[in-house]
Length: 345
Image (tube, rainbow, N blue to C red):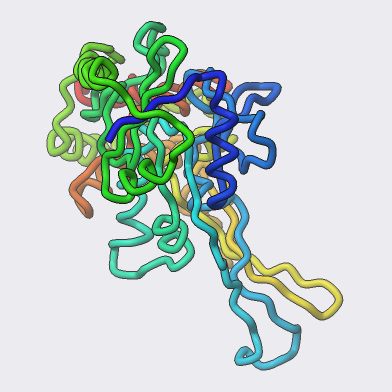
C-alpha cells in the first residue's frame, strides 16, 4: 500500500496522527532539528539532514522514573510507575537510526532480562522511516554504508517515506504499518507512477555513498583484541578528548545509565538517568579506586564495546555510522578514522 500527501500539508497528517495517539517528530530548534512530542502540528518539520540527538529517547528517555516511595516505609508499600501509553508514532526517522532500534532491542528486549519500559514503548510505537534526500550531498561524517545501511533503506520501518518533489510518498512495510495507512483516509492513494518512483528511489539509495571501508566484524573484533594493550596507539588517538560525553549522548546505540534516588519531604523517587563511559567517575568505586583514570582507557572502552565486545557477545557491531559522534565532538575525534587506523596497526 502506497499513499501520498503534499509536503505543505504535513501538518494535516500530523493532526490526524495526534488524534490517534502521541506523535513524536522532528522540530526545528535554534541549533538544529531534534525529535520532540508534537503539541502543535505546524511544528513538524521534515526539512533536515538528520537530527542532532538520536531518536532513542522515544524509547529510552534521558530521565525516567521507576518507583515512588515514602522514606522509612516498607518496600512493599513502594509504587512502581505505570506508563499507561497511548499509541505512539515516531515520524521521520532516518534509516541508520531505525537500524539502531534493532541493536538496542538486543539489550532491552532480548538479552535475557526484559526491560518493561523499553518493551512497552516499542510495542506501542509505529515507526515512520524517512529516506535521505538523494539530491543533497552526504554529510562528510557519515559512514553508515560501512555498516551495510543505505540512504533509502526501509528495513525496520513500519511505514517508509520518500520525498518526491513537493510530495511525500508513504509505503506500508509491516502489517502494522499497512493497517495504519489504510486508516489514514485523509491522504490520497499513490498512482502507478508514484509506486515506480518509490521503488527506483530505494534502488538509487544504494548509490548514495557515505564514507566506506570493507569492515569485516570478525576481523576488527580480533584486531581490537590484539591492540588492546597498545598504550601508545590509544593515547595518541585520544590525546584531544575532553571526556565531555557528547559522543555518547548523541549516539543512537549508547545505553549506559545510572540509578539514583531523589528524596524530598519524606517522599522518594527512584529513577534512571543516562550515563556515559567517557565520564571520569563512570567507573569510580565506593572504595575510591577507579580502574579507568586515564582518558585513553575510557575511549578504548567505548570503541571496544561497540566494535569488539558487542560482536563477541551478540554477533553485531553496535554502531550505525550516523556520524553524530564526529559531527558534534568539540575536538573532532572521528571513530571511523580510529577504526580505519586500528585495522592498519
